[in-house]
Length: 293
Length: 269
Image (cartoon, rainbow over all chains, first blue to last red; front, side):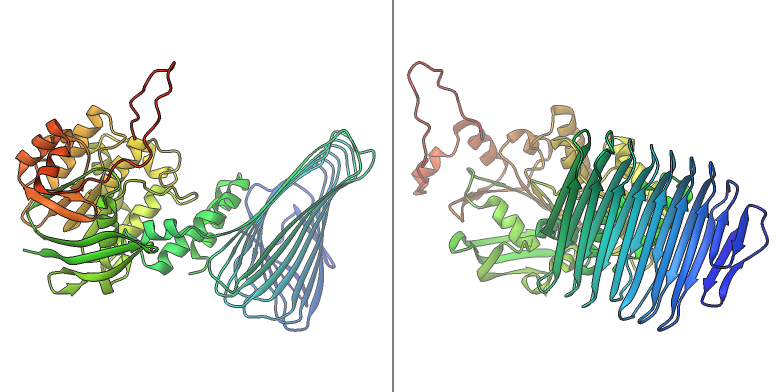
């Protein structure tokens, strides 16, 4: 297993590997890697860290990143996916019981490269995440899915953006949220196609389900389209959990808590489907099963 | 031997009183049929026993042996041995049938079933009910046909092995073969420890699963009780003859006007 740990003192690779270079604050993937690469990021209180991933041309990689951030910490990340590289990533946020945590990701996807990403944002923390994707080369594509849970008075803000800066690019995001026990969840989904970048498509769905009174949920879809020859769509919905669903499950002996957990799992489940990789899928499913338990 | 006892049960939906004093005793080993025209409270009775939040009990009691059913939550009622096979089972996206069934089974076991035990049990029942093998991996009732949903209710009953099964129009949406399979499944559950209350409009189900007791529920009250012969009489004569017993049948409120020039069709609800 390839394991990389990252904290304020630096980047450590579990065993040296010719396919991966570590340079200062950058992890460079120089060749395709068959097996899953695990990256663990740890930040202490008040720390801030900048990390870059570079995926060289024509590489294929799959990566699981698990980050545990702390109160008042800031995590900046740059991801560059060079021409023709195909990257699958599963990003699990394990930040717990922390205040004012921020994570900013800038992802640049070059010509004919693709990135498909699943975010699991299920732990309890006051958290702000900005996940900003730029499609910088013709034929670049990004597929982003997020499962977010805000529970027990937590406040979570997300900005997920895909900006098209080349022709024939495609961006798709699906953000799913569950809010319970006075949680607050704000999701801004932004799709931007600049003038001249014809043949592109920008699609997004934002859906939040609310379990009880006292929760706040906002799903804000934005599309900024400055070109005619494109496809674009957006959908946003915030709704209450269906009481009939709860009744049905309870009538089979599941407690209210168990029923709600199963409904949460079912609701966030579509996020798993973005991960076409069996290992990552299993990992994601396991994480979801524990959500809100 | 167990006893489910319903005493002077009054049930409201909003401000409207639907059940106006139901008395019913069900002992284990018995099969009860409840008949009656639409909109007279049959489904309400079953849902009230299960504890649907829409129905408020204004008077009366339901007890299971010494336990006060009305003070229990829906899931506690289920774990106490009451099961409701619903008329309109819910579709729940993202939750697979097998995850759901496993959770439901484990909810009543001290030690959870192993995956192997569970699959063995599930496969056996799926086969007996002649259901699609993919069923376990499909989302709960999502995209199921009417008949598949009903069979899925019966599958749950067979897995959960309740003491008291309430089956609400379990035969609607079933074709002849499916009805036979479902009837066989109910009959296979019959024992001294099992009892069942069935609501249906059709004699066919009661022919296949012969009830020991038959009740007619009209305007929120049980107006007459008898044996199997009552079903035959209703099947042949409808409910009009009950007027002779002093029962007032509610007049159809919105009769469909028959427009000249078109066929007068029989409206099937």
